Length: 252
Length: 83
View 1 (tube, chains in turn brown, yellow):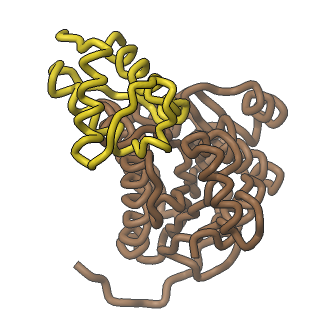
View 2 (cartoon, chains in turn orange, cyan):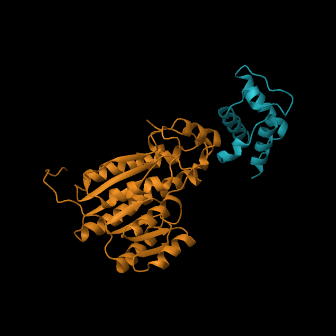
């Protein structure tokens, strides 16, 4: 079914943003940045780290955190309800929670493949459905940013299932943007390899090779991704259904 | 589980190399790069061990990166069968 194209009102900046996987790394950097930008943030992760706890304790009226496994839909629903009671209606979502992979496909246990797909693809789709239903039910416009990966576009050994999930989220980003008809802006940010935990999947030799092939001469840092996420959540642009790669042109 | 011995795994490794016209040296300290035994050869060997034992051998990549010699391959697969 296609709707006739009609001029749509612009989508206002998100004011209450739900961030999955917000306890460390890029997720924590996104939470920190959004709070500094004046946005209210509801962040969850399997384990609430002391860093995330500290943010919540410092700004209890603007930051709600909780320990939730993203694959536990009932727990996620309960968290969202509690967050909205405290912060107000959620009008932004950052699907960041994910697990990595570090094994050749033929030597990855079938259970591990299922777990990677459940965490990195099924769970964010469910969280998106849950959040969008609440936005639409309240007549809100909103924004979604999916954190994917350069692995969705380029091949890397040891990351087959992980790459498949990230490619799936890139594809979902485009279809969601179409389906939500400009009422919710949906985009993805695809970082290159970080010089941190997720890059443990590549050996030092491979990382050195990536750095050599990167025109900017360095691996991506979370601080370089955060402004792009903030821009997609807050700035007035007509960007929708896009995957923005942040990798210093390593992949071009 | 029908566990393969180190000697049996060595025989399988020799077969993998022989199929490519290569020879497995007698010395366990031989460097895999000099032997021409690559990561996919390791996968082939692991899958052959699986065929023999009927048990899947799954492992993460960091373990593979530590493998440099023929002896490392044999030690790794012997140990993996016990996990």
